[in-house]
Image (cartoon, rainbow, N blue to C red):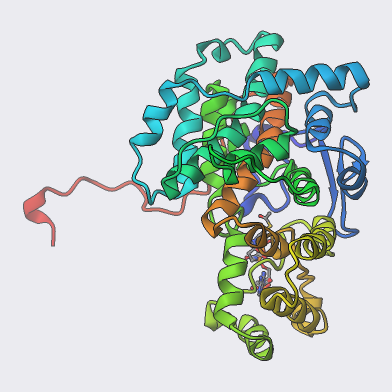
Length: 403
Ligand code: ACO
């Protein structure tokens, strides 16, 4: 381990690493990625196995606690999450303060940050029990907040959480249900939703997780830290990419124009990149994208969507790019966002909700990482250094002497 301060004091050198491409900011036992081999493990379990056999809540328990739950732990965890799904009624007023056309991510940033005004006990995070309650509250309330953001944007009444339903089912019910009619639940869509949540649950020190850790390193309230993570996730180079994939496919317009788009993406001056392609860590097929592609087929079949033009374009784009020297040599493969937008669109989510769903699912990763940081005896406030390249010291120039 290199002591940067010592190195700097002795040699005048320290690491300059824009974008942290090769600097570890922390040790972690939560998620392992081998980007060259396309491997993703949560606490040692392969993402594909979890997507097939686990549930999102079981995966949450695993990420938070390090081990899969035994039957009684599973039941008590699920009961605790169910117990915390409601939002304080005062939060309804907060929602009403937003414009109807507010982006759901803007609403989520605000509402999740505002939870810190409701749960003062969460500042007592030397106490593991208080930390656990904050974690459970966040996981439980995110679907309620995301669904309310959606309902508010379309002017429908809020739907209250139903504790007799599973996590994904309850979210679908709050999003697409209406008070007068019982919501018709498709087990295939509920399973697909749950799997999408599992695939997005954690991804080690990505930009939003690092943001949560950095915010938390100052001792900020966990709800405020998660709000910071949501803000970071919003950007198109991170969580906004699935929205950008759909926009790109719609702009391309038809399968026969895909080749032209791939050509354009190779031209740096065009300012156009293939959205949903490339990843900072994966230099191989993103293992989440594989599961996502299968899920996409299942969802479209369940919904009876045949010959979905966007899916056809996506497949053609993948085929052409993966045979193209530019993409092969730069190891640019489809990432998790490439197929998720098509699934979510087919399920009835407007594009503005895509990143909100990502935030919902990633909350468990953020809060697990936050908790690991708090428990780490080596933890200290995050304080990156800089290489100053500005002016050297100079005298102040009075206003009447300036040109
Ligand atoms: N299309 C075309 N060229 C690309 C693409 C792309 N999607 N992605 C990277 N490249 C090229 C770059 O131009 C660069 O070329 P150069 O070496 O000749 O300069 C090279 O590949 C490396 O790209 P960088 O931007 O330096 O790689 P970085 O690791 O910083 O970026 C990122 C990764 C942001 C994901 C990038 O691949 C990208 O912009 N992809 C599209 C957006 C996207 O899908 N984001 C989702 C990421 S996954 C997630 O957040 C869950």
